[in-house]
Length: 85
Image (cartoon, rainbow, N blue to C red; front, side, top):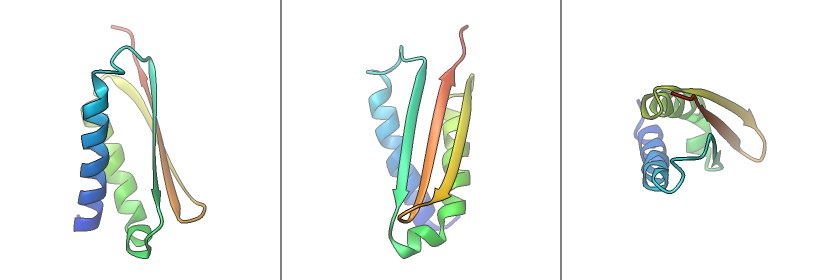
């Protein structure tokens, strides 16, 4: 895993974890990352897969859908749908 991928995903997950208490009752959460630096774009696929893995670990009982596409850099979007217990 590249340091760039680790750092970007660690930063994103830290923000998600900090916001989780405020949004714990939301049935659907959406997240996005926009990579514009050439080094970030080169690591885009790695960042995509690591972000997906970390989200699935953080929300183990949710449906997690992650998509990536090129547009003004590389964009990664994620939607988390919590399942009722």
